[in-house]
Amino acid sequence: MEIYGKKQIDIREDNKSAVIDILLKRESTMPQMSEQLKLSHTALAKVINELRQKNVVVLSELRDSGAGRPPKLYGVNGDCAIACSVIVMKKAVYVYYVDMRGFQVNKSECENNFASLGDLLDYAAAQVKNLKKHPRLNEKILKNIYVGIPSAPLCGKTFSEASLAVSEKFGEEFPFAHTVARRNIDYEMIAESKYGVLNNGIKNAVLLNLDDYACASFMLGGNVYCGDNGMQGYEPENPFEGLISAFGADYENIAESYRRGELKAVSAVESCVGAQIERVGNVMRFLDVGEAVLSGKVCLLGDGFLEFCKSKLGGGVRVRYSAMGKDVPAALSGAVWQATYFTLQEVMMR
Image (cartoon, rainbow, N blue to C red; front, side, top):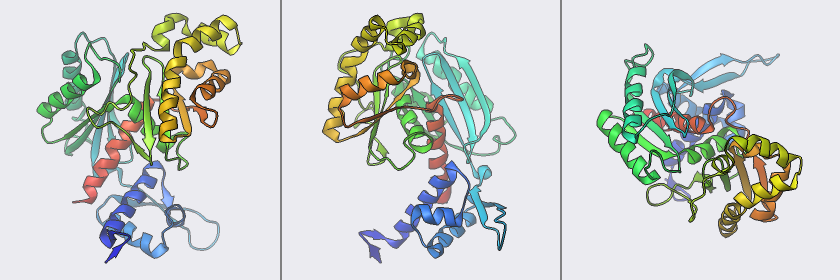
């Protein structure tokens, strides 16, 4: 039997993925999931039962409803598998092992003072190995490693060169694990769509970061666009060093002056980034994207900069600052979500 071109079994698999997507964000009851997914209780019960048989979903607790039978609260079984995320940033390197709820099991963080990309990848691979000795990890099979690297050159290598080096190094060290290397900005977009200002069903948006480089991630139809070749996505034609490089240690003082409306600071900031924002606006208009989120230290510029961005991107665009990245880097949150989600997909296929 086929429904709208899909077999019934395929629809059920899609529903399983949708349930996992919900439960990775928060534990939920059947009525809550049924309402979100627009599924009947009977159809949802079949999906939940299959996921419980796979040991992917567990009954978390009975929630007190005050009267009558208390609703059951379901969640992802954190111990059904493990995953690893590695995020390389300009100033730091993060290696995190997580369970299937996305909760940290073991981690390593250090400053990025590596002289070469080879040294950096040697360190990261060694940490992936050493951290797996943790009692909750050492007997489990590592299936997925999600690695994030900057869009800007890393240790003198372009993104394409660095991502290839990551794939080769991790492929050699972890031949039975699947390694995915993506831009940090794309992981930021994933985090924003799952936990941030875009988590309310917005399907088309751009995430723009101007800190160290002008880089943007586009979400189209609910999927993050990563480019056809090298997963580079959108890159400026003309090199742009970013706000932090342009203003250095004075950036926070300049941002404060910008918020006060001091003409010298306003002119310096807007002339620095105006052309880059206009170019993103041209792409947005072509793709009919009406949502923009700004991440990184650009948020220090305040509401006045949001108005400036609106004027450059187009009058109908809604522009907001990201609220992600206060406790852990947003790219790490996105990489962890990807690692857990796709590992769970594999567990469901067993």
